[in-house]
Length: 182
Image 1 (cartoon, rainbow, N blue to C red):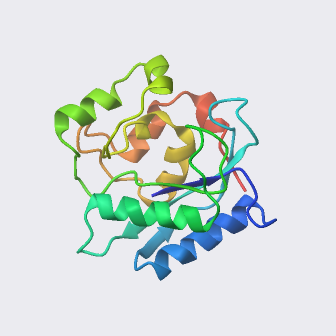
Image 2: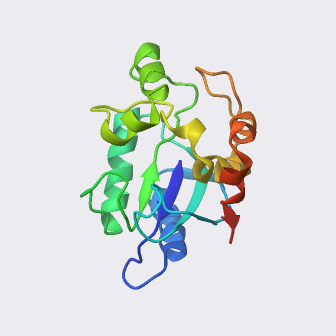
């Protein structure tokens, strides 16, 4: 899971919201096995608002939950912390992204590959109408990969065969350097 926030919630800073979201995950039956440090990261896309605080977690999902059910629970937790889905890539009090569910590829390999390989200009305009796993932008984002490397550096993308560590090393140094530990 990836966590991010760039707006306060109930006058508390994003770091507090992320810590409370971690506790909410456990209240919902998710076992938090590892949680990364908090990182300050530039707003994405640039200029769209205040900078973010990001983190990642390795979560054990209750066996009876499928990916759609997990996503629904994550959206419920976001809503508890004031998340409003008004604008894609907009400012938010809390964002929890389901990055992967083990080595599952959803809805199928061809669809995952198609969304993962979209050109950047198309990414800004197009949004999938269903859950795509692993998250199709995972390998492109230092603000996801740096915290993820804290908790699952050896997790291997089931379609690319690259580990988190390898995906992170493939990003430009400037992207990696922009993610600062708090």
